[in-house]
Image (cartoon, rainbow, N blue to C red; front, side):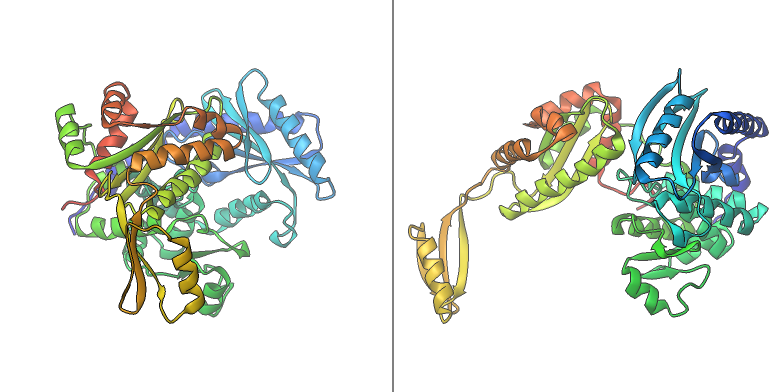
Length: 460
């Protein structure tokens, strides 16, 4: 394995002393201000990577948890959390966000701040809200994580960012930050973590506190491709939101890095968007069907990505059900103005007639139903290999027509933000995609990567 200077990488990703001092000063002031603010909260706790000093340079995210007594009703808990949050953000930009319950997040002095209400509990067995366990994560890691392991966490976190496998949000479906720290606790160092990850299989179990002495019990409890038992709560798999695709991508990236390490694994490829002539050439060689819609104004990306994922599955399902072969699907938004769905298909237009294979002739009832439901086929019915067979017209033979009709249905059935987006939805041509490519730099990066269709960390 070629040597790579990790200290040089750390220089690029580790906050400077000046940054750390600025962060600590800001957090101390904000915490003090919250404590002095009149309300029903009994304490405020800093959480997240900043609280453990495992954060990356430029990650100016402050996660503050307002702690309330267990006796406070859920209604009061939510109302008081929002009231205090709005009061703290007064004069600054803020928005209401949602986890298990609503909370306030925004920006103060260049820092992204989240003020999340949580119950003050003595153990995770008393959970009243999913976020109640977060202070226990902080306490556990502060006790367990060694000083020299903090930079190892930073390396692993940046590696995941560089290989696009970081983030538990609905946009990414990847590894949450908490897992990076648990993996370093498990394996000791960044390189060890990659060596072990390269050998991961389905149903890999990581159980730091040995909550499940028998691995099979953990597998039975969670049944997931990766099981990372929360050391502070045996009933939770920290990797529950990790998609199988992102799990596989991380494993592949770990193997590729160990064969041929390089900085690109940490900072991504530096390829420029393709020129227009190359884009046009690739589009002439590929059958694409695309849907474009407007991003709903003021909608939270966290909520929109979940709805986009569901819409994507519906679009893909409709296309497959009508016998179009899909090579790949992708969806994207700049989270400001545009939403795009892309489908690469074998053929945009398929034969109008298709062969329908029915039940075995010996199945009398099913045979009767099949024959009665296809009274005017193009050809048949006849018997082949003991089954009824006929040719009939497809409902859809053009993928664009199919999607236009599917969008009409979705417009009627959707609600709130996605209804606003779907009103503007339309099937667009390759010419429209090229025009968008000319104007939108973010789309240029996305579309270039889509058309190349290659994992950026691969050398072959």
